[in-house]
Image (cartoon, rainbow over all chains, first blue to last red; front, side, top):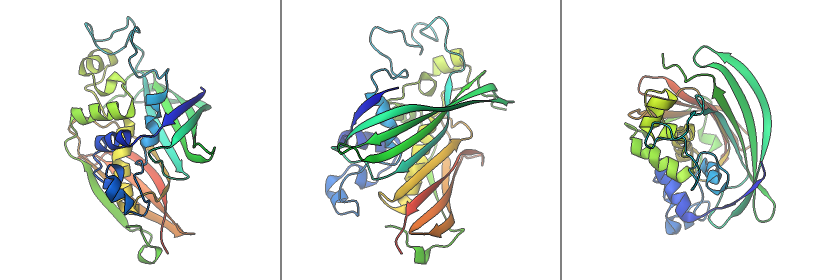
Length: 159
Length: 136
């Protein structure tokens, strides 16, 4: 899966915090953040996931010249829409230090375990794990993320 | 801001309403910030007519981010050492979510927390745990 370079920027942190409705000044106000225990702007705890922005091949972002499976003239832009698609089953973070603007992280993503399970609400479930290690400019591990994705046989029953 | 071991006991809890009447636009905002543009979160036509869901729904990571806001408000800035969840039910536009952290253990300068977020029907949407550094 390779290594992704993830530059951590203050405006990106601000937009991410806004999206989760977090008005804590430590995510957007450098002056106020200076007076806190952490001494400056830091990223909120799930920000590491935004590494997707820096993955050139990320499959959930439309790319120029390539068909996109969301709607256009028709409900799906591809002939055969992907099955029920992938859903996020679990996410786990281990924090070694906060992410800060100016960090340039190297993120190595490795496949983990895979397993299957039968479910009443969505048929056969295929789980796959991914481990991402975020290292800073000095090579120090700053964040470890483990995600579990699931592909369902059919859309999840809402009953 | 940070929690102090001398003022904490197992069973203590902290709750916050982390979103009220979740707008589709906030889901769009999260897609833009996170870079996850999966149309099942923002494209009603694709989601209802092609993917087979009743409406678009929130990214699991948006719900985790909302839950994380409650956690950092409780434990303080930069204090989390671990945070992990399972996504147990989908979150839909219009949902109102309440997140709760409950102390399960205290020791070695750390607090362990049980974390849960529920919707307006009392249905659990996220369950997990967290750990944070605390003062003596």
